Image 1 (cartoon, rainbow, N blue to C red):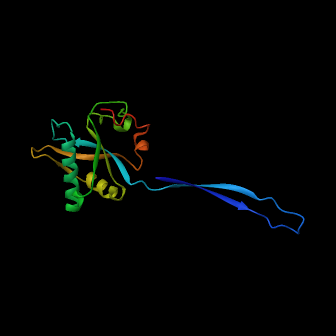
Image 2: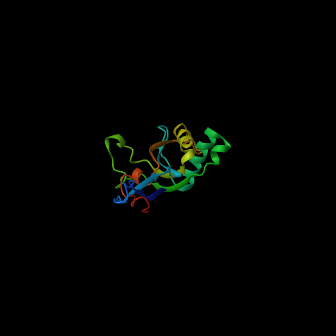
Image 3: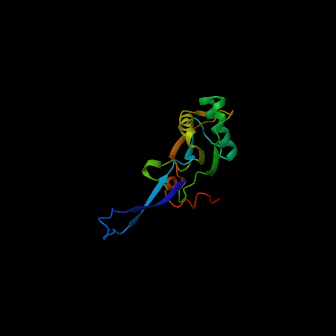
Length: 167
């Protein structure tokens, strides 16, 4: 993702006459290139609609179904072809990474999903998920809320990221 190149540049001043020679000086130039990463990471929260009395706990199969339904509704068959990797499902308990703040007060009871999508498709995925309201056939309507989006998972987690993959 990042390339570091070292270049040595030699500077010589022209000699004046035959008696004097200038000393050759060398300097090192370091170039650092940070390219766009291939993935975008999203933290999604599944929000049940007010008429839903008892939401089902989120599992990987339900999350994949909800994500595919949102992409299919927004983009058709092209949307279902977007690869989405589900990294982690968090259930609605307050944990070290899911502490309640004034902005998230009352939100800790809902399930979260950490997903990764190709960077080029991130805008379409965010649009599809944020405008989708759907659910299972039993009349339970749910919606996705995008809690966080970023190109680097470590920055998105706001820490070392070591607790992301703890079961």
